[in-house]
Length: 82
Image (cartoon, rainbow, N blue to C red; front, side, top):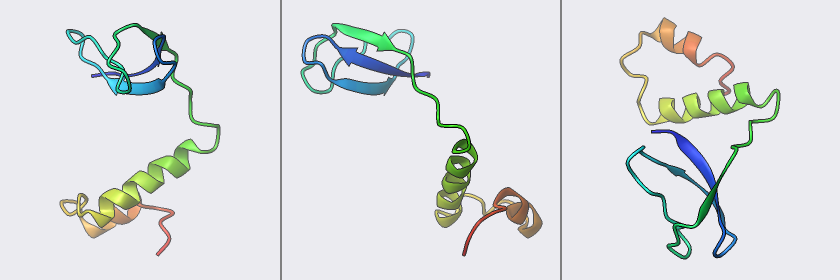
């Protein structure tokens, strides 16, 4: 499912939603289906790697990397501060 940004023409709210091709999105604020699809902004240059590492640290704290060997975990989480 792709993630789309929307602007509600009824209440002027901006939001994003995961939308299946068969679903019609509605505004979470007013319930309207009168929406304009927007282009999603990209992460600023230089921030993508920091965002990726932050998500990996969260996954590591939640135990989601437990099936990796210690050397693989070290490689995946390089740059991790303890």
